[in-house]
Image 1 (tube, one colour):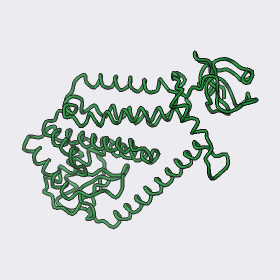
Image 2 (cartoon, rainbow, N blue to C red; image 1 turned 120 degrees about the vertical axis):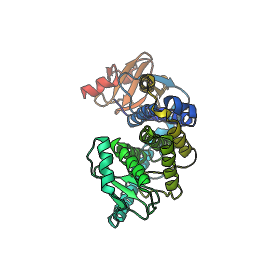
Image 3 (cartoon, rainbow, N blue to C red; image 1 turned 135 degrees about the horizontal axis):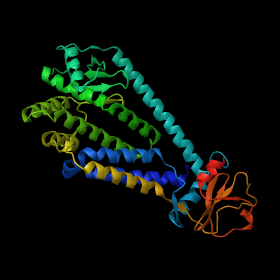
Image 4 (cartoon, rainbow, N blue to C red; image 1 turned 45 degrees about the vertical axis):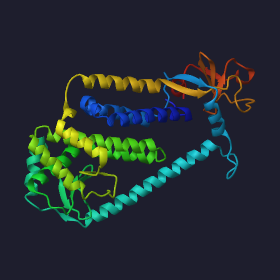
Amino acid sequence: MALTPTSLLSSLISSALFTVSIWMLLRLDVTLKTVGRYISVFLAVNVIRILLPVEFGFTITLSSRHILTELRDLWLSEVSFGIDGLTVGEALGYLWIAGVAGAVLIRIVQHLCFVHMLGKCTGYFRYDIRAVIERINKDFGKAQHFKVLLVPEMRSPAIYGLVQPKILMPGNRYTEKELNFILRHEMMHFYHRDMLVKVLCEVLCIIYWWNPIVYLLRRIIARVIEINVDCRLTAGLSDEEKIEYLECIVKSMKEGARPRTGMMIMFASQRGSAMKQRFHCILDNHWLDKGRKGVYITVSSCLLFLASISFIVEADYGADIPGTFDCPSPETSYLIESDRGYEVYIEGEWMGWIKEMTETFAELKIYEDLEDVTNEN
């Protein structure tokens, strides 16, 4: 595997196409009725593609002599200010790293402030809360301890914490049945590892802080996990009980507020079309339809993933590689043989193509693919 600017670009383009396609499909009710419960497979494939912005030994290289050549020339050009010899690509890399550091710092401060706020909160003692939790745990066949806190600053119930989960309750007055709905909903999030998914989304947003597609992906994932929990929770309820559950969501939604940290899942934080879809899925419950759709979608997702990593487009300068290399060092430079000629790597960086061997590169070692280079080193 090798990480290159073009492999990163290919990953970004693939993930953008995946994300926008899923977002458009989710806007259609027919999608939810037919393959709704399997959307998570597409999302998982998308996340994996974003986390693997590399080219593999079997990746087929396609050439571009127009847009990518101009982008590569810009990438390798020196900036007109600041440090001498600093290229545009290096400057963008430093900016990326600085942005990641800033995003990490912001989330650490938010987390510490949120934890400090929770430290001042008291327990939630309305009704026999422990008995309700034990009954729900028994239904799930689990024995996890949940701490329930009264958080006046919150306007909607939420769950927080990966290892020691805390259910956060606002000052709203809920009936005992509504409390049962809320606790069951939040505990189901924890048992389905949705908190881990939430953390992964935040990590992606930290790494790709400049990419709006990642934030759209986070919104889609939040919508899907909410619908999934709603439908599983209400699968065995009567129509009357489903209406009561929806009323509980509406009651929380009226007082909804933005969370103070990204590391929690709120009971009713969504609005507009996202909330309408939750209601439709709860009432119709098509989300849990079973059949062979899961197999077809899983296979299709895997094929799309393989297609996205099987091809990469590189800048093709033909025989004219930018820059002059009098005597590239055989220790740090090499050639990759292909059906188009040779790919040239100088100091470990891809520089372009040559169609025929020239005297300049005659002493460089020739490999079949990048995997051979990695294995030798």
